Length: 321
Ligand code: AMP
Image (spheres, protein in one colour):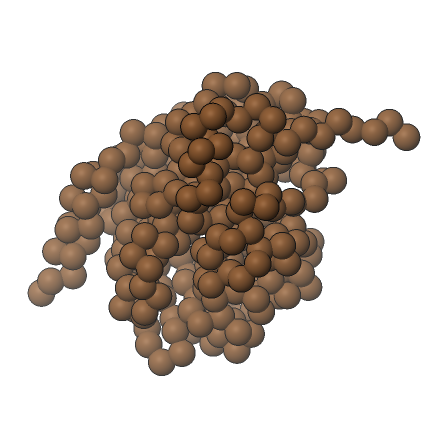
């Protein structure tokens, strides 16, 4: 059998990255992808995407994420440079074979992505390895990827204080048992409404959240696309409104950027109270709504803290009556 050559990105990482990586405060495992996306407003091919990419770009607005993932030899250098420019730790990024690819489209209901093709490629034989320097990170985001890999990362992190888990229909269909195992180990479960109904076999989202809470998480967040997000804890319920976006081009990565901003804000503020979860949900919604304004990562690339605070205020005003 021909052995595949696997390289760890740290071999190529630049000095500044090596100096700063001990300070990384959010560990994110997920996909780094080349996406083909079609929406009623246009089409892009081989765009930089993937759950870990969106999540770490969003988290980097608040904290210093490090990512664990795999790319192929076909992955453009300019995309690696973009990731490095955000000061995202890439010592856990492996290179082997061909990059994971996702091909999807949206019709006029932009809340639902339809998958044309998923090519796992190098993800198929990927074994997530957490570099020594990342093993003490306390905030862990298990973004959307094979749940066996999510569990593998959790086993390697020494004492995670706060674990957020995301998943999607692809893994619920193919590896439900592992998805449930991962939920049992998470502090917060993130799901969109369709996935919550599918996973817990109910049309009722309150029922789905209660079933999820019984598995162990302290909180469940159900993302409802343009209609906002619901936060359920044992005795409380909060809902963040959707932002009335007039200019929406591509919602790909909104769920991941919601999750990245959510955990990034909590890592920055070091406050895991329910009231701070509510603020984190609003920051997640703010970043996700910006993300939909342009294709791929084009909007997150330019997003500033000033943009975020401005929209956060608008969210507060929307709820005054
Ligand atoms: P979101 O729109 O937030 O649900 O996520 C979009 C991103 O998820 C895209 O950039 C895809 O590359 C990535 N993606 C698509 N399918 C999968 C999958 N099965 N596992 C992990 N990531 C995926």
